[in-house]
Picture (cartoon, rainbow, N blue to C red):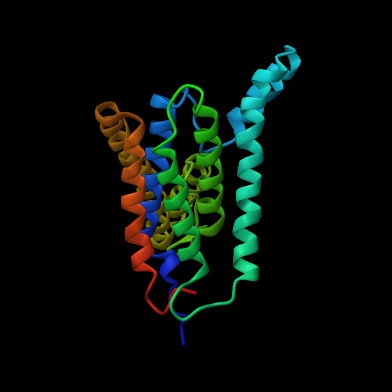
Length: 221
């Protein structure tokens, strides 16, 4: 008998999380200092550049999100291992609840001097999400960044076309849809943020309520 699919791997849940990822990148870029807080490669490069130039204080603003991302991964793993499984509430729901709480706090932090704090919080949130939701429809994906998804999707597309494997082509489309909804989230983030400003991050809190509710199904393991 086939193992039932976990609700955390549900495609709808995955694209909602991807939309949140895209939204957060647009938000931090537009009103939180022109940075992308989801992926840490750029921060690591800029950290190295500023260290080389002797700009140690400026390097700190890149070190903090990197450290926060690492802490987010540790927190996610600790919650997964330490918290007992509950019939009513799953550890991944706790992760989303933490995300909602932390992003809600960001609505009260003013821009300017508070940007470093917000970008650090967003980096931690993205780490919690990317570590906790790593499989969608049986495919390993990331919902807060696109490089790996683009590589995996294109690789599967090539394999599917070259071997006439319809399953591989279908799997590749999962990756491209995740990327598409990341873009949609970024577009929505840009439009809403331009109208509302720093408090527009509340839209992510509202959107995250949907996957939180979805995971009340019993096959959420």
